[in-house]
Structures are given as structure tokens and as C-alpha cells.
Length: 395
Ligand SMILES: Cc1cc2nc3c(=O)[nH]c(=O)nc-3n(C[C@H](O)[C@H](O)[C@H](O)COP(=O)(O)OP(=O)(O)OC[C@H]3O[C@@H](n4cnc5c(N)ncnc54)[C@H](O)[C@@H]3O)c2cc1C
Image 1 (cartoon, rainbow, N blue to C red):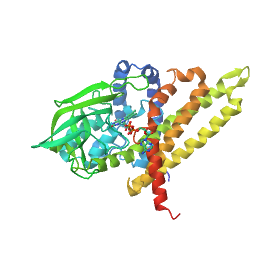
Image 2 (tube, rainbow, N blue to C red; image 1 turned 90 degrees about the horizontal axis):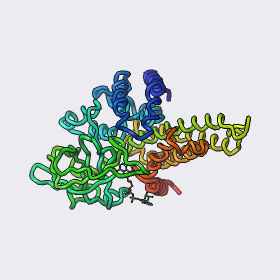
Image 3 (tube, protein in one colour; image 1 turned 120 degrees about the horizontal axis):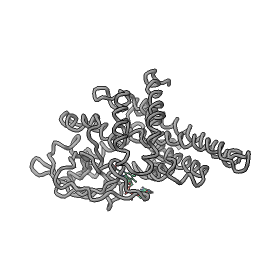
Image 4 (cartoon, rainbow, N blue to C red; image 1 turned 135 degrees about the horizontal axis):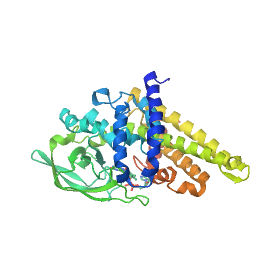
């Protein structure tokens, strides 16, 4: 299926923006001092708006570009070539998932109060589901409660890996609102402004040697008698798990295409390094058979991954996330594995340079190891796929 000419044009403009304005910012960002690059990032976010690259996933009524998921997948791949791409165009996780959730399931009042400023980039948000003492891979085991009291919910519990909680204006919190209901109908998703008494960012969790700051953090959040109106609940009482599935389907397309963008950049760096690094006079790394195998295997894996993800995206566009659930599970573990393979080979080809922060490879290696864990660990997706295949086939 060919891309519409306006999408092809958009991709050309994104390529130019990345090359001319974003890649030059990366060395400072990779040195880890987010505060030092914050003013430059703010300026580039304004540039992205002026260039018409802003919130590409949203409909025009919210300042977006009205792309299908399949079209946005192409955008996400390109933006993934830089660790800054999605943030500069205001389509970074977890905000993108929260925007889509509010767009499809938020009340008019919730859209007005939270979606509009989020879409404009005036505020940030976070998603608070996983708990330290319970398995995130089986979120029906959840301790946080939001119990009705008069017109309000009173929330008590502890979450961690609430990505980007530091500096967020609100969290979407998953909590048990009806402990007596069926286990898949016990939880709801509730908007909690972070200035609500009882919301406390207890710590930013160190991950792979980095605590980060601002949007690049993973917060541990305590909710202690945190009281919000029941009108802050998104969707129906007890719909928390159903909404989580709706959020995660497109979210996995976003992540997988971003990972393919990372793979493409790492692949190009590996090829360039292999051709230029001489192991002996006139004998570049690229003449080694093992390096040629890395290049060939990476090319095959990346191409296969892209076809799988775009196919899943087209299916979601046509039939919805539920119909595409097997495809979504397949891409989640397959592309996370390809990402890890390609990054590892690219680092190996760079030798010592590969593990420094003079290139983005080490940053991605640290950050994206988690790709095989978040949004469902590999094992959970593989089991889900295998069970469905065994159940549905005529064996
Ligand atoms: C970088 C990062 C960002 C995150 N961001 C967010 C966020 O913004 N908001 C949020 O709420 N959460 C977030 N998470 C949490 C993430 O969703 C959970 O880590 C994930 O769901 C796994 O849960 P867990 O860590 O409790 O691992 P567990 O559930 O304890 O699982 C541990 C391991 O057990 C294995 N396993 C689990 N289930 C099975 C099974 N059925 N069969 C076989 N093996 C199995 C897997 O190998 C798994 O890795 C983030 C996590 C990371 C690492």
C-alpha cells in the first residue's frame, strides 16, 4: 500500500529536521545533563510545531496531523532514529498513550482540562499502574485502592516505574474501585493531578546506573488518602483493564516502530564503522566474514520486523486492537529481540567506542533492554500467542 503524498512529504520534512536540527543536540543530551539541554529542547519543540511536525498521532481538531496508525508507524520509525525525536514532536510515551486514552474515552470536561494542554505541550503526564510488591505481568494482582467516599475516590497505594512522573501535571492511576467485582472488572483508571494532597513522588528509581531527570525518569509514587472527584475516572467503573488493553495495542505499534528506527540508525553506524575502521593497513573490519554475517542478519531481521509491525498496524486500523491481539503480541517480543541483537552487534563492531556515550548506542543499549520487559514481558506474549494458536487451529 503506497503512502499518501502528504505523508511522504511529512517524512521528508522529518528527515531534514532530524538531520539539521536534532542530531546536533544529541552529544549534549547523551552526556546526561538534561537540565543543560532543556532550553534547546524547548526551542526545538517550538520549531517542530512551526514546521507542522507536532502531535502527528492526533486528529487536526487537537493540533495533530490526522494520520492512521499505519501512517503514524512510518513517522514513529523516523523519529526513533534520535533519542530526542518523539519528545520534540510531542508524541513520546507515556504522554502519547494518555492522549489517545483521553481522546477516545475521556469526557468532554476531561479533554478540555487535560487533553488540550497535553496536546499543546504545555504539560506532561504519566501512567501509574505497576506496583513494587505485585507482578506487573499479572496486573489483576493489584493492591492500590480507590474507594468511593461521597462524590470522591480516596486512593491509597504505592506504584513504581511511573515513567516521567517527575514534573508531570497529572497521573492516570490504575486502582481497585470495587474489590468485590470479578477480577477483570475490579479496577478503574483515574486522573490524579500531581498537586493533589496525598500524591507523593517518593523517588526516581535508578535504572542501569542512571536516575535521570524530568521526563527521563521512572518514579516511585505513594498515594496516601489521595482524594479526587469520581468525575476524574476515565470511562466506566471497572473498565480499567479493558482501557489498558485499548491503550497498549496502538502503544506497541508506536514502540516497535521506534525500535526499528533505532535499529536502522545502529545498522548504518555499524556499516560505516565496518568500512572505515582498519584492523591492519588496507584491511577494514568489513572484510571479516563474521562482520558481514552481522550486517546480513541485521538487514534481514529489521526488514522482517518492519513488515510484521506495519501489517499489525494495518490490521488495527481496519479491525481494531482486539482482532489484532495475536499480531500485537508477536511484534512486541519479536521486535524487542531484533532491537537487542542489532544494538549488540553495532556495539561490538564499534569496540570500546561502542560502550562510551560518544555515540547513542550505549544509551539505547541501557534504555532499551527494558523493551523485553515493559508492556508485557516476552514470555507473557509468547505464551498468549502459543495458547491462541493451539486453541484456534485445526490440529
Ligand atoms: C523502563 C520501564 C518503564 C516502565 N514504565 C512504566 C509506566 O510508565 N507505568 C507503569 O505502570 N509501569 C511501567 N513499567 C512497568 C512494566 O510494565 C513492568 O515492569 C512489567 O509489566 C513487568 O512487571 P514486573 O516488573 O513486576 O515483573 P514480574 O511480573 O515480576 O515478572 C518478572 C519476570 O517473570 C517472567 N514472567 C512473568 N510472567 C510470566 C509468565 N506468565 N510465564 C513465564 N514467565 C513469566 C518474565 O520474564 C518477567 O520479566 C515500566 C518498566 C520498565 C522496566
